[in-house]
Length: 332
Image (cartoon, rainbow, N blue to C red):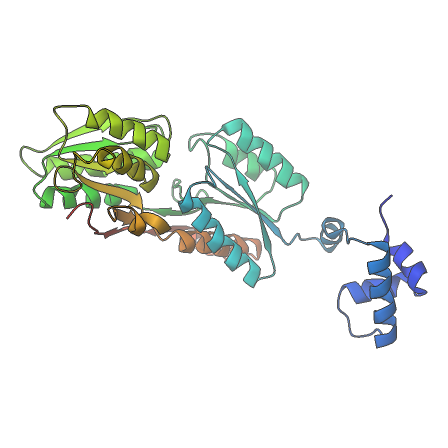
């Protein structure tokens, strides 16, 4: 049976109010009473029901963050930024990874709502779904992370992925490459589609340039390796590859270089996306389009907290960062 606050009070020989004052750090309790209460807590193994306390206070100190894949270092960095910003205001972040599955995402949302989170930070599994409306109808404040929405509808923090795709392919074209392959990941993903749009714009600006699209079922190292193995076996290989994220790019790099007969960048130049922590440490340091992942996370929390406090100007509801090309050996 769970130990209750009245059990602690009885064990310490004090009132329930005194135990409450000790738990909340109030200075009205004598040092001797504080010592007895803490000893009783240790002896009984009392664990405070923080959810109930927050519910009585009228506001939770927990925020939910649901991303597509916490195994992706980009989203791990987003989470770090969110946790740091939340902690500065005394909040904690509960993390969920939907796997880009709408049913899994809804399960997380229902569970976090049961925990009475103050608000939700969400990279939606389906950008065209009704999850935002579902949260709004339940009165749950939400900020979309690494996602866009129509102006004024909902708070969002995103990156201009069309510009990012253009930066990547324009760089490859500037190196004299003309046969570009885009290793895409699922084209239904909004970020992938936007990066492809930017890539197409860059190719259209250079006469004789072509763009081949290689769609993969996932945006992982293994999926990139499979795409790279397919390229390695071809006689009509492209002379450059733009991968929709760094995990795909790392897999492509592994496949192309594993036998030593294809040189990166001499034979095939390579650019990734996200500039994750180990992009610079691959066997051939990876050129990548950098997204400010930790800043995305911290900005999303800032928007959510200001929304909760009623201090958010409607004109500030949507934040969009510009990407940056980081050139390394894989494309020079």
